Image 1 (cartoon, rainbow, N blue to C red):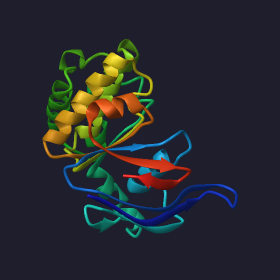
Image 2: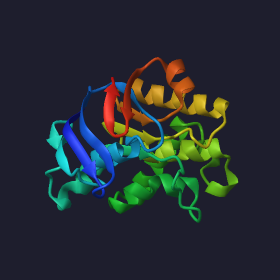
Image 3: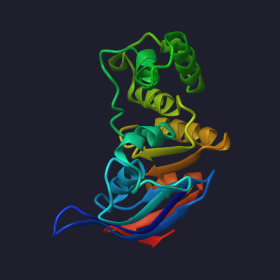
Image 4: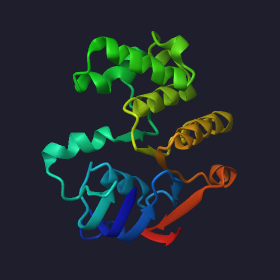
Amino acid sequence: MIQAFHVYKQYDRESSALSDVTLHVAKGEFCFLTGASGAGKTTFLKLVFREELPTQGQILVGGRNVTAIPDGQIPELRRSIGVVFQDFKLLKRKTILENVAFVLRILAVPGREQKRRAFAALKAVGLHHKMHAYPMQLSGGEQQRVAIARALINEPMLLLADEPTGNLDPDMAQEIMALFREVNARGTTVLVATHDREMIQRMGKRVITLDHGRVVAG
């Protein structure tokens, strides 16, 4: 699903975010990307999602070289990738149903279909009963579940999560990980960037470790 070949990312002459990263995440796999703050985890996810380009090297997602696709094809790529952020990135003035449906609205999906699919996504994360609530009326864990529902609305082949439990208490973090496990069981490849070693050990999944931009394990 993800293949990276000798990937480098240099922001300036003095700092290298990634250095000669070569790795493979198989289709249908659940994998953790770990390392200390500044190890290059978020940078790598941004390259996979084509938010940024590598300085050197290639990244393939589903066999497609995302470093070489034209800008006009980036939206199509992103429709096949769900992304969950640590800070949720929800629209505060929209209900959670509207937040989840927002991607479909951009894609000009008919209104009735937007609502149907958004409701189904919220039901999958146990929040359909709060569909008319606003983000600030929800707990941190509930907001993160909304963000997961939004990421899954297009039934992506790949789910990327960047420190998705960083702002949550341990019990809620376990709930979020259980959701990711369910998503993975349905066939979606899951890559979670985190520095939470205890959570990684509890999950018992494959771990890729970065240290100063280099793969040192996994």
